[in-house]
Image 1 (tube, rainbow, N blue to C red):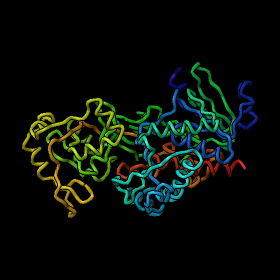
Image 2: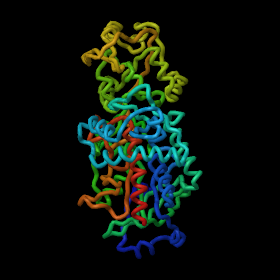
Image 3: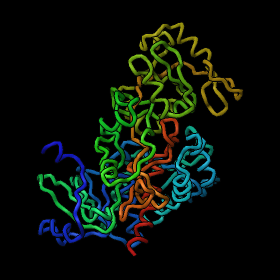
Length: 483
């Protein structure tokens, strides 16, 4: 297959008659009301929400098993005003959630999407619980960076893979067709109206198959796996480790550009400053929020860990050899062991124990005196935020990291992009003239997110917030469009 044949493309026809006539005979009768490209959290949940509304859909997934960025995430979904919060006695509102999003994004997150998503996400989470057996629990023993309320919803297994497994089981229970190993390469479009009439997808045999449709939802995430687009849009991350899904090849962005769609916030992304590169495991940032620190190869702290794990990626990458060391003690080790990914990292020998500061300094390769001074200067705030080394705060109590110490070697990584196709509050894709394309929706990482224009705007959980909220909104918008 040539590079051109591998690339997502738009094929234009003069009218609907010409488009239909060009389809292979065996595809003439292949028709679905809704086609969803991508079987990540956005695509599968959209299919479930459409099913709840009595609308049939077909999900096309390029991989053998649906996974995407969602399976690689923590699986934690922020939501405000949910039944799960109420059951745990936690008070929260969409308005408070919206304020936290905008505070993190310095007021530059798309206001129409912030309002729409924070209002929709509780309905989405409750619908998955009530209609599909999702058992949400709100993490209420620590706050993620930027959140003023406990609102991170997790399934009992606390992993992104568990979230994806549950979504897949729910789709199977509803007999929703999810066609894997079906990489969508072509959108067949009527030239003047820009209406998508069919999509073409490549099967394992190498053959192209086609399906006609009334509405198309792009839920195929962003462009983190496309080195050319990363270099173009977020050049500061082009040399970073990519910890996202390779299927995030920018198809939605490329199709949108070909259709004259507007894009927004392409410089925004979710990074992470705590990626155990040797083991390929994400290290929970709860360690940092509860008092762990990051030091560089000189044994010194180099940033305020409490600002957020996304912008921490830039800070870590700016250090010599693009690496840092997470340092924490036994009480924090107990917390970390409540996360399955951390337990897996321990099994892989990625967590090192040291009974003296000297031993830790030798492992890092830094002067012992410098590391001792870093640890001696450390204090912890009442919320567990590490202080000292210029990161001062008046909320102090007497607690320092104590022996034995534990450490993990980490680097900064790119997880997924947060910019994409411009959509309105119903998730319809917008043209450069600020009009909705006739029958095209986008959600999750395929669309503009709520993190503003840069890495510092990412609030913990914004990725899955966008995925599930946009799925809920798009399903209702598509239902209304079809009827």
